[in-house]
Length: 154
Image (cartoon, rainbow, N blue to C red; front, side, top):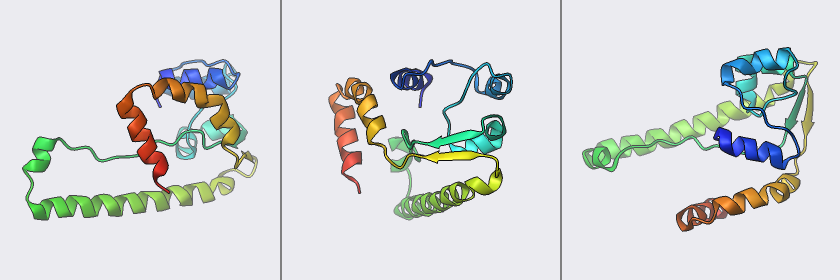
C-alpha cells in the first residue's frame, strides 16, 4: 500500500495519519510519538514493533498480492519448457508462501504472551468506511475491470 493510500485510509478510519520513514517507526512507537502502525504481522515481528505496541488488531483491511512480473519480450524469448518451469515454480512458490504466512499467523500468540490480539473477523465495517476511497480508485475502467475479476475469484 502506498503512503498516499495508507494516509487516506487511516484518516477515513478517524485516526490522524503520520507519515514516517519505515526505519523511524520503532523509535516513534517507543517514544510514544505515535500510537500505532499499520503493517502485517511478519513485518511487526521483524522490526520489533510488536514489543512496542502491545495491541494487535487483525482487521484484514488490506491484502497485497506478491506477483512475478516479467516483460513480454523476456517471456517471448523463453522456450515452452522454460515457460512451463516458470509457471510451475510460480505456483509452487505461491503455495509455499501461503503456508509460511499461515504458520506465522498461527504462531502469533506464541511470539509474545503479553500481546493482546483483537481479531475482528468482520471486514464489513471497514469495507463500508473505506468504500468511498475504493470508489475514487475505480473511476478508471481498467482498474475497475481488474478489481471485478479479483472479487470474482473465490
